[in-house]
Image (cartoon, rainbow, N blue to C red; front, side, top):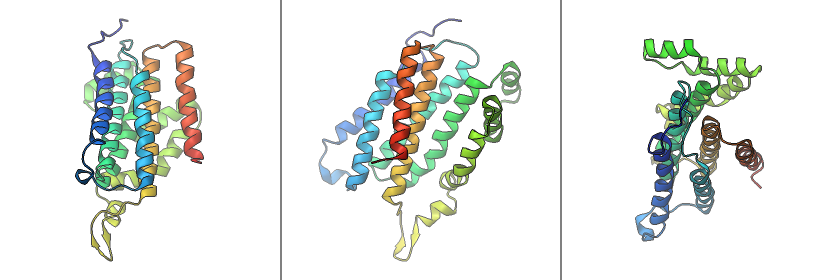
Length: 240
């Protein structure tokens, strides 16, 4: 196994996180009339999310150990991080329909990365090469649960998949947030939008933790990353 050179995949992904955050910082200095008027709750949630972006860019490894599985898991985690940044930008511009639609993409990218890291053996990789298809999300969750010895992933998918699919594909839940007694237009509530930010932040933190594992980071660094993820989970469970 060899270490990927710094000019390869991961520094590019890290720079995208930094550049997206910098873009939001610059926009903060623009005239107020050029930006949508956001509630104080959304502004605070975006500020917290930007802090997480800054933390991710600081703790993002510069290289990974190249193996067949890491070259599948790594891009998946990178896609998760880029989609997360897009969600933040969309919500900052009050484009909540598109931000909600991307939630499923953030989730899928993280789950496929974790599956590749934990479950993809030579047989699975050979099948991907042969069929040009990745496993379905049902297969991903079932194999992750088999590896973990419980039903955690299938249960969590069952809670969120239908709603995420509605938002991703213009289903009923998305349409309900566009049609009302006062006419047609987006009306995604702040509470739901903050939940979307919580979820993409969580997946982003988990993705950078996965990248650190692929990079074979020292145990102390992995433990520090894990503590950050656990702290965020605790905050999400009790936002007070």
